[in-house]
Image (tube, helix red, strand yellow):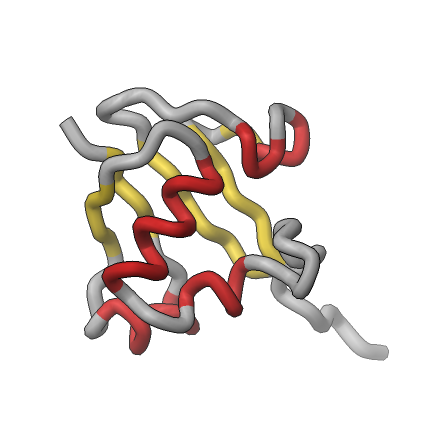
Length: 94
C-alpha cells in the first residue's frame, strides 16, 4: 500500500492539478525524492539549498509535524497519509 500525499493548491501545477498523489517511500526524504522523480520542481519547493525543509513548509505524517519527529528522516509506513502545508503569510491589519 503506497503513501498518500496531499498536495497544496500552490503546488498542484507541478502534479498536473492532482490534489493527492501516491508514492512508495521509507521516509520523508525518500518521499520527497519520489515526488521529484515524478513531478519535477517539487524538491525545490520543499527543500532549501542544504537539503533541509524550508522554514515556510510544514510536512505532517498522520497529523504529526515531522519537525517534532525526525524531520526528513521520519519513517513512513504503507498507508500513511502525508500532508504538505505551506505557511500562510499575512494577517489582519488595522
